[in-house]
Length: 268
Image (cartoon, rainbow, N blue to C red; front, side, top):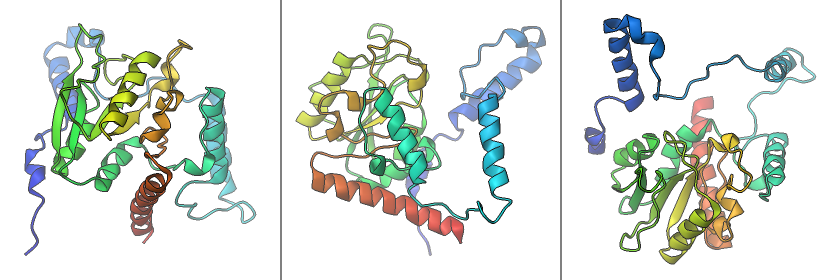
């Protein structure tokens, strides 16, 4: 008889965003005169049409599948080289050097957030900001890991800093933060990198909203911090590194093998 993963019993009955949507719907139905004034802080959905350039690129890609000369089947499991190079160029324009071959193009950071937990043993201590993207907590809860929290409050500008009395193995940082929008500056990220290196910890750095940063003094990537490339980074386009080249290679390969096996199962 198969045994269930009992850790799923510890996940909240309702996904946070679904619960927010439910409460908003109830409020709209009971207060229709105030429905237009609701400020929605639930899941980040788009509110404007796609730009002309995006629509044209989508049509071009779809049309290319209709003729044998440009038709493509399943793509490379690690992403097309032209896309990897374009992402590397984007980061280079923002002062961050990343090899195109270190870029893994997946189906999104949400899936990666769950997949990457499989690389780490269950007895790791996971440090998570509060408030933050709820998937960080849910995925580690389902995996049975020990989660501890660091509070983002008005007093610390919703940017919790390292506590030398707390020992963590895996650290989640989200900058700009979801949902507060708070963004770490260079000095603050330097403190986090120093803490991670001192404690042999790994940083999972989520910068899904870095495009909203307009202040040129604020880092768009933890790779802008000296020593930051000795930590793991997970973002909307994840890059993986560890403290030395051997660990970096094994960690990257493990992550790729994990994702590739999922893609191969999906193809069949």
